[in-house]
Image (cartoon, rainbow, N blue to C red; front, side, top):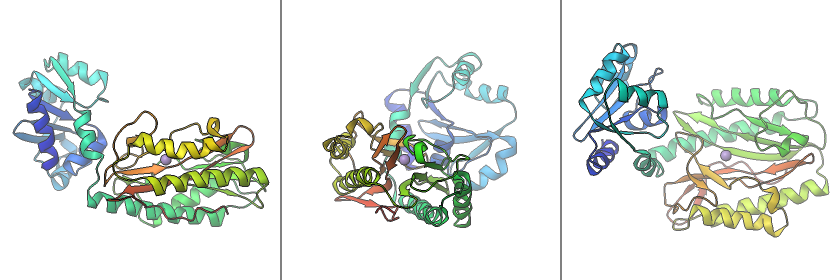
Length: 347
Ligand SMILES: [Mn+2]
Protein backbone atom coordinates (compact mmCIF):
# COMPACT_ATOMS: atom_id res chain seq x y z
CA UNK A 1 0.00 0.00 0.00
CA UNK A 2 3.02 2.28 0.30
CA UNK A 3 3.22 2.37 -3.49
CA UNK A 4 -0.47 3.26 -3.77
CA UNK A 5 0.13 5.89 -1.08
CA UNK A 6 2.58 7.71 -3.35
CA UNK A 7 -0.03 7.90 -6.10
CA UNK A 8 -2.59 9.16 -3.59
CA UNK A 9 -0.19 11.87 -2.42
CA UNK A 10 0.30 12.93 -6.03
CA UNK A 11 -3.39 13.11 -6.93
CA UNK A 12 -4.16 15.06 -3.75
CA UNK A 13 -1.36 17.48 -4.53
CA UNK A 14 -2.63 17.98 -8.10
CA UNK A 15 -6.24 18.09 -6.87
CA UNK A 16 -7.26 15.21 -9.13
CA UNK A 17 -10.34 13.12 -8.32
CA UNK A 18 -8.62 9.83 -9.07
CA UNK A 19 -5.91 8.02 -11.00
CA UNK A 20 -6.34 5.07 -13.35
CA UNK A 21 -3.56 2.56 -14.04
CA UNK A 22 -3.87 -0.02 -16.79
CA UNK A 23 -0.35 -0.75 -18.12
CA UNK A 24 0.55 -4.41 -17.70
CA UNK A 25 3.81 -3.89 -15.77
CA UNK A 26 2.34 -1.16 -13.59
CA UNK A 27 -0.68 -3.29 -12.72
CA UNK A 28 1.66 -6.01 -11.53
CA UNK A 29 3.80 -3.48 -9.66
CA UNK A 30 0.88 -1.98 -7.76
CA UNK A 31 -1.41 -5.01 -7.27
CA UNK A 32 0.82 -8.10 -7.51
CA UNK A 33 -1.67 -9.42 -10.05
CA UNK A 34 -1.31 -9.76 -13.81
CA UNK A 35 -4.61 -10.74 -15.49
CA UNK A 36 -4.21 -11.93 -19.08
CA UNK A 37 -6.98 -9.59 -20.20
CA UNK A 38 -5.68 -6.71 -18.09
CA UNK A 39 -7.60 -4.64 -15.59
CA UNK A 40 -8.12 -1.14 -14.24
CA UNK A 41 -6.55 -0.01 -11.00
CA UNK A 42 -8.61 2.92 -9.78
CA UNK A 43 -7.00 5.00 -7.05
CA UNK A 44 -8.80 7.77 -5.19
CA UNK A 45 -7.31 9.98 -2.46
CA UNK A 46 -8.36 7.50 0.23
CA UNK A 47 -9.13 4.25 -1.53
CA UNK A 48 -8.04 1.85 -4.28
CA UNK A 49 -9.85 -0.87 -6.18
CA UNK A 50 -8.72 -3.23 -8.92
CA UNK A 51 -11.49 -3.66 -11.51
CA UNK A 52 -11.10 -6.70 -13.77
CA UNK A 53 -13.16 -8.48 -16.46
CA UNK A 54 -15.52 -11.02 -14.93
CA UNK A 55 -13.55 -14.05 -16.17
CA UNK A 56 -10.39 -12.80 -14.43
CA UNK A 57 -12.14 -12.14 -11.12
CA UNK A 58 -11.39 -15.35 -9.20
CA UNK A 59 -7.73 -15.39 -10.13
CA UNK A 60 -7.23 -11.69 -9.44
CA UNK A 61 -8.81 -12.08 -6.01
CA UNK A 62 -6.15 -14.68 -5.19
CA UNK A 63 -3.14 -12.63 -6.29
CA UNK A 64 -4.10 -8.97 -5.80
CA UNK A 65 -3.09 -7.06 -2.69
CA UNK A 66 -5.80 -4.49 -3.58
CA UNK A 67 -9.55 -5.24 -3.25
CA UNK A 68 -10.93 -6.62 -6.53
CA UNK A 69 -14.20 -5.81 -8.31
CA UNK A 70 -15.46 -7.20 -11.61
CA UNK A 71 -17.18 -5.69 -14.63
CA UNK A 72 -19.20 -7.33 -17.41
CA UNK A 73 -19.40 -4.70 -20.12
CA UNK A 74 -17.39 -1.61 -20.99
CA UNK A 75 -20.56 0.47 -20.65
CA UNK A 76 -20.65 -0.66 -17.04
CA UNK A 77 -16.96 0.15 -16.60
CA UNK A 78 -17.25 3.69 -17.99
CA UNK A 79 -20.37 4.25 -15.92
CA UNK A 80 -18.20 3.49 -12.88
CA UNK A 81 -15.83 6.34 -13.88
CA UNK A 82 -18.70 8.87 -14.14
CA UNK A 83 -18.04 9.80 -10.52
CA UNK A 84 -14.90 11.69 -11.52
CA UNK A 85 -14.12 14.82 -13.48
CA UNK A 86 -10.33 14.82 -13.41
CA UNK A 87 -8.11 11.78 -13.75
CA UNK A 88 -4.41 10.89 -13.55
CA UNK A 89 -3.34 8.54 -16.36
CA UNK A 90 -0.24 6.78 -17.66
CA UNK A 91 1.34 8.49 -20.65
CA UNK A 92 0.92 5.42 -22.83
CA UNK A 93 -2.85 5.22 -22.32
CA UNK A 94 -4.35 4.86 -25.78
CA UNK A 95 -6.00 7.76 -27.54
CA UNK A 96 -9.10 5.64 -28.07
CA UNK A 97 -9.46 4.92 -24.37
CA UNK A 98 -9.00 8.57 -23.42
CA UNK A 99 -11.69 9.49 -25.93
CA UNK A 100 -14.05 7.00 -24.31
CA UNK A 101 -13.28 8.47 -20.90
CA UNK A 102 -14.26 11.87 -22.27
CA UNK A 103 -17.35 10.81 -24.16
CA UNK A 104 -18.73 7.92 -22.11
CA UNK A 105 -17.59 8.92 -18.62
CA UNK A 106 -17.61 12.69 -19.00
CA UNK A 107 -14.08 13.14 -17.66
CA UNK A 108 -12.74 16.56 -18.57
CA UNK A 109 -9.26 16.84 -17.19
CA UNK A 110 -6.26 14.53 -17.51
CA UNK A 111 -2.82 14.61 -15.94
CA UNK A 112 0.15 12.28 -16.46
CA UNK A 113 1.18 10.17 -13.47
CA UNK A 114 4.31 8.88 -15.24
CA UNK A 115 6.80 10.83 -13.14
CA UNK A 116 5.60 9.54 -9.81
CA UNK A 117 5.53 5.95 -11.09
CA UNK A 118 9.01 6.38 -12.54
CA UNK A 119 10.33 7.66 -9.22
CA UNK A 120 9.02 4.55 -7.48
CA UNK A 121 10.04 1.93 -10.01
CA UNK A 122 13.51 3.32 -10.69
CA UNK A 123 14.70 2.22 -7.22
CA UNK A 124 14.42 -1.52 -6.81
CA UNK A 125 13.55 -3.12 -3.46
CA UNK A 126 15.77 -5.91 -2.15
CA UNK A 127 13.13 -8.43 -3.32
CA UNK A 128 13.24 -6.99 -6.81
CA UNK A 129 17.05 -7.04 -6.86
CA UNK A 130 16.93 -10.69 -5.90
CA UNK A 131 14.48 -11.55 -8.70
CA UNK A 132 16.49 -9.64 -11.31
CA UNK A 133 19.63 -11.36 -9.95
CA UNK A 134 17.91 -14.70 -10.53
CA UNK A 135 16.93 -13.64 -14.07
CA UNK A 136 20.60 -12.73 -14.63
CA UNK A 137 21.78 -16.16 -13.46
CA UNK A 138 19.43 -17.74 -15.97
CA UNK A 139 20.81 -15.46 -18.70
CA UNK A 140 24.33 -16.58 -17.73
CA UNK A 141 23.27 -20.23 -18.09
CA UNK A 142 21.81 -19.51 -21.53
CA UNK A 143 25.02 -17.70 -22.54
CA UNK A 144 27.04 -20.71 -21.43
CA UNK A 145 24.82 -22.91 -23.59
CA UNK A 146 25.35 -20.59 -26.57
CA UNK A 147 29.13 -20.66 -26.16
CA UNK A 148 29.06 -24.46 -26.08
CA UNK A 149 26.70 -24.72 -29.03
CA UNK A 150 28.21 -22.23 -31.46
CA UNK A 151 30.31 -23.71 -34.22
CA UNK A 152 30.91 -23.35 -37.91
CA UNK A 153 27.90 -24.34 -40.00
CA UNK A 154 25.22 -23.90 -37.32
CA UNK A 155 22.34 -21.57 -38.01
CA UNK A 156 21.87 -18.57 -35.71
CA UNK A 157 18.29 -19.67 -35.07
CA UNK A 158 19.37 -23.12 -33.83
CA UNK A 159 21.58 -21.54 -31.18
CA UNK A 160 18.77 -19.20 -30.08
CA UNK A 161 16.36 -22.14 -29.73
CA UNK A 162 18.80 -24.02 -27.54
CA UNK A 163 19.25 -20.95 -25.35
CA UNK A 164 15.52 -20.53 -24.88
CA UNK A 165 15.25 -24.18 -23.89
CA UNK A 166 17.98 -23.73 -21.26
CA UNK A 167 16.25 -20.63 -19.90
CA UNK A 168 12.97 -22.48 -19.43
CA UNK A 169 14.66 -25.46 -17.82
CA UNK A 170 16.16 -22.97 -15.35
CA UNK A 171 12.74 -21.56 -14.48
CA UNK A 172 12.32 -18.62 -16.86
CA UNK A 173 8.83 -17.83 -18.16
CA UNK A 174 10.29 -16.87 -21.51
CA UNK A 175 13.03 -14.82 -23.12
CA UNK A 176 13.08 -11.14 -22.15
CA UNK A 177 13.18 -10.25 -25.88
CA UNK A 178 13.90 -11.99 -29.18
CA UNK A 179 17.42 -13.37 -28.76
CA UNK A 180 19.97 -11.58 -30.88
CA UNK A 181 22.56 -13.75 -32.58
CA UNK A 182 24.29 -11.73 -35.23
CA UNK A 183 27.22 -13.32 -37.02
CA UNK A 184 29.64 -11.97 -39.60
CA UNK A 185 28.42 -8.82 -41.38
CA UNK A 186 25.17 -9.04 -39.38
CA UNK A 187 27.13 -8.37 -36.15
CA UNK A 188 27.33 -4.74 -37.32
CA UNK A 189 23.55 -4.55 -36.81
CA UNK A 190 22.90 -3.70 -33.14
CA UNK A 191 19.52 -5.50 -33.28
CA UNK A 192 20.28 -8.50 -35.47
CA UNK A 193 17.68 -11.01 -34.23
CA UNK A 194 18.76 -14.62 -34.85
CA UNK A 195 18.18 -15.55 -38.50
CA UNK A 196 18.64 -18.55 -40.80
CA UNK A 197 22.21 -17.51 -41.52
CA UNK A 198 24.85 -20.16 -40.93
CA UNK A 199 27.82 -19.20 -38.77
CA UNK A 200 31.15 -19.29 -40.57
CA UNK A 201 34.75 -19.62 -39.43
CA UNK A 202 36.47 -16.37 -38.51
CA UNK A 203 33.25 -14.44 -37.95
CA UNK A 204 32.40 -12.16 -35.05
CA UNK A 205 29.19 -13.30 -33.36
CA UNK A 206 27.22 -10.93 -31.11
CA UNK A 207 24.95 -12.76 -28.67
CA UNK A 208 22.49 -10.49 -26.83
CA UNK A 209 19.91 -12.18 -24.66
CA UNK A 210 17.94 -12.08 -21.44
CA UNK A 211 15.40 -14.04 -19.45
CA UNK A 212 12.05 -13.09 -17.97
CA UNK A 213 11.77 -14.60 -14.50
CA UNK A 214 8.68 -13.96 -12.36
CA UNK A 215 7.96 -10.72 -14.23
CA UNK A 216 11.56 -9.42 -14.05
CA UNK A 217 14.08 -9.11 -16.88
CA UNK A 218 17.81 -9.57 -17.39
CA UNK A 219 20.08 -8.46 -20.22
CA UNK A 220 23.55 -9.61 -21.26
CA UNK A 221 25.66 -9.47 -24.42
CA UNK A 222 28.87 -11.25 -25.33
CA UNK A 223 30.78 -11.28 -28.59
CA UNK A 224 32.96 -14.16 -29.74
CA UNK A 225 34.98 -15.12 -32.77
CA UNK A 226 34.54 -18.58 -34.26
CA UNK A 227 38.10 -19.76 -34.82
CA UNK A 228 41.00 -17.32 -34.62
CA UNK A 229 40.33 -13.58 -34.41
CA UNK A 230 42.18 -11.34 -36.84
CA UNK A 231 44.04 -8.22 -35.70
CA UNK A 232 41.17 -5.82 -36.40
CA UNK A 233 38.63 -8.01 -34.60
CA UNK A 234 40.96 -8.23 -31.61
CA UNK A 235 41.55 -4.49 -31.64
CA UNK A 236 37.90 -3.46 -31.49
CA UNK A 237 37.15 -6.19 -28.96
CA UNK A 238 39.81 -4.92 -26.57
CA UNK A 239 38.56 -1.33 -26.90
CA UNK A 240 34.94 -2.28 -26.16
CA UNK A 241 36.07 -4.44 -23.24
CA UNK A 242 38.13 -1.59 -21.78
CA UNK A 243 35.16 0.78 -22.09
CA UNK A 244 32.76 -1.72 -20.53
CA UNK A 245 35.07 -2.49 -17.61
CA UNK A 246 35.65 1.21 -17.03
CA UNK A 247 31.89 1.73 -16.92
CA UNK A 248 31.34 -1.01 -14.35
CA UNK A 249 34.25 0.25 -12.22
CA UNK A 250 33.15 3.89 -12.39
CA UNK A 251 29.38 3.57 -11.87
CA UNK A 252 28.44 4.76 -8.40
CA UNK A 253 25.76 6.70 -6.53
CA UNK A 254 25.96 10.47 -6.94
CA UNK A 255 27.07 10.56 -10.56
CA UNK A 256 24.51 11.11 -13.30
CA UNK A 257 23.54 8.61 -15.98
CA UNK A 258 24.89 11.12 -18.48
CA UNK A 259 28.28 11.23 -16.73
CA UNK A 260 28.48 7.45 -16.83
CA UNK A 261 27.70 7.49 -20.55
CA UNK A 262 30.49 10.03 -21.05
CA UNK A 263 33.07 7.94 -19.17
CA UNK A 264 32.33 4.90 -21.33
CA UNK A 265 32.00 6.86 -24.59
CA UNK A 266 35.31 8.66 -24.00
CA UNK A 267 37.26 5.38 -23.95
CA UNK A 268 35.93 4.51 -27.40
CA UNK A 269 36.45 8.07 -28.66
CA UNK A 270 40.10 8.06 -27.55
CA UNK A 271 40.75 5.11 -29.86
CA UNK A 272 39.08 6.93 -32.74
CA UNK A 273 35.89 4.84 -32.89
CA UNK A 274 33.49 7.40 -31.37
CA UNK A 275 31.45 7.55 -34.58
CA UNK A 276 31.03 3.76 -34.50
CA UNK A 277 29.45 3.68 -31.04
CA UNK A 278 25.96 4.40 -32.34
CA UNK A 279 23.77 3.90 -29.27
CA UNK A 280 23.60 4.86 -25.62
CA UNK A 281 25.71 3.13 -22.96
CA UNK A 282 22.77 1.42 -21.34
CA UNK A 283 19.30 1.45 -19.84
CA UNK A 284 17.40 0.55 -16.71
CA UNK A 285 16.13 -3.03 -16.36
CA UNK A 286 13.20 -4.22 -14.26
CA UNK A 287 9.62 -5.19 -15.04
CA UNK A 288 10.42 -3.85 -18.50
CA UNK A 289 13.57 -4.68 -20.44
CA UNK A 290 14.13 -0.99 -21.24
CA UNK A 291 13.17 1.35 -18.43
CA UNK A 292 14.60 4.24 -16.42
CA UNK A 293 17.19 5.57 -16.27
CA UNK A 294 18.62 5.79 -19.79
CA UNK A 295 22.41 5.78 -19.60
CA UNK A 296 22.74 8.39 -22.32
CA UNK A 297 23.69 12.00 -22.95
CA UNK A 298 20.01 12.93 -22.57
CA UNK A 299 19.41 11.54 -19.07
CA UNK A 300 20.69 13.50 -16.08
CA UNK A 301 19.17 11.17 -13.49
CA UNK A 302 21.47 10.92 -10.46
CA UNK A 303 22.38 7.27 -9.87
CA UNK A 304 21.27 5.88 -6.52
CA UNK A 305 21.65 2.57 -4.69
CA UNK A 306 19.02 0.11 -5.89
CA UNK A 307 18.96 1.26 -9.49
CA UNK A 308 19.59 -1.51 -12.01
CA UNK A 309 21.13 -0.60 -15.35
CA UNK A 310 23.01 -2.15 -18.22
CA UNK A 311 26.48 -1.09 -19.35
CA UNK A 312 26.83 -2.09 -22.99
CA UNK A 313 29.24 -0.21 -25.22
CA UNK A 314 29.72 -1.39 -28.79
CA UNK A 315 31.60 -0.67 -31.98
CA UNK A 316 29.91 -1.37 -35.31
CA UNK A 317 31.68 -1.27 -38.64
CA UNK A 318 29.30 -1.78 -41.58
CA UNK A 319 30.09 -4.88 -43.67
CA UNK A 320 33.00 -5.79 -41.34
CA UNK A 321 31.14 -6.59 -38.15
CA UNK A 322 30.56 -5.42 -34.62
CA UNK A 323 31.41 -6.01 -30.98
CA UNK A 324 29.18 -5.35 -27.97
CA UNK A 325 29.76 -6.39 -24.35
CA UNK A 326 26.96 -5.91 -21.85
CA UNK A 327 26.27 -6.63 -18.21
CA UNK A 328 23.29 -5.89 -16.03
CA UNK A 329 24.54 -4.17 -12.86
CA UNK A 330 23.01 -2.93 -9.63
CA UNK A 331 24.11 0.37 -8.13
CA UNK A 332 25.26 -0.28 -4.56
CA UNK A 333 26.14 2.04 -1.64
CA UNK A 334 29.58 2.79 -3.04
CA UNK A 335 29.77 1.41 -6.56
CA UNK A 336 28.15 -1.09 -8.86
CA UNK A 337 27.93 -4.86 -8.83
CA UNK A 338 27.59 -7.08 -11.90
CA UNK A 339 24.54 -9.31 -11.77
CA UNK A 340 25.45 -11.08 -15.02
CA UNK A 341 28.74 -12.88 -14.43
CA UNK A 342 29.77 -14.61 -17.68
CA UNK A 343 33.48 -14.14 -18.50
CA UNK A 344 34.24 -11.06 -20.58
CA UNK A 345 37.53 -12.05 -22.20
CA UNK A 346 37.51 -12.81 -25.95
CA UNK A 347 36.70 -16.46 -26.69
MN1 LIG B 1 20.49 -4.05 -23.30
